[in-house]
Structure formats: C-alpha cells, structure tokens
Image (cartoon, rainbow, N blue to C red; front, top):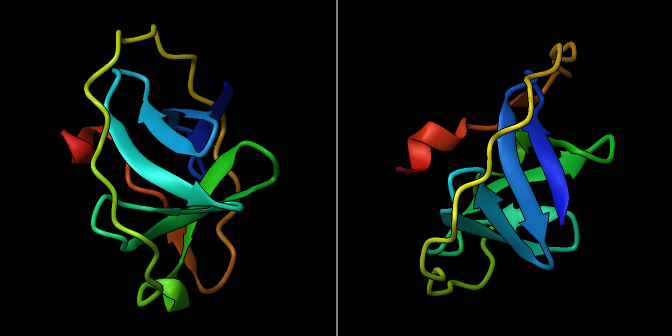
Length: 101
C-alpha cells in the first residue's frame, strides 16, 4: 500500500496493487502502469514524483478498461496534507477524494 497526495498537497488515499482507494475506503480507480482510470475507463490522472496524483489536460480523451468497483473498505485516518507543488503547464490538480462520494 502506497499513500498518495494530490499535486496541490491534499491527502487523497492509497494505491493497493493496481487499485486506487480514497482514505475513507472508496474504490475509485484502477491503474495501468502509473496512469489511473475511473470505473468507466475514463482517464483520471497519473502519478508523478512517486506519490503525487496529477492530471494531464491533453490526456482527458484516453480510455482504459472499465471495471466494477470493490465494496467499501474500512476508512483510514488520513495523513496530513503537504505543501503543494507548482503546477506544470498543461496539467491540472487531481480531484480531491470528496468528489468521488
């Protein structure tokens, strides 16, 4: 299990194998390498700098495989937020975990 934060520094959740989970136990994505897709196969974003989630604006049309999300897991106490990184041109911050509720 690897904990992940958004590029802006918000604690998002964790990667467990090829699955992306919010800290409150919701299965929201599946990874293909370091790129993550939602349950419908739509591009959500990618990992940069080992533990930060970010979205490349030009990749919004990418498609992966759809999947059926796992049942909710027990929530974890989230880690503290970090200071955000300066945004790269052509990128935007990954949506926060509350947008997947």
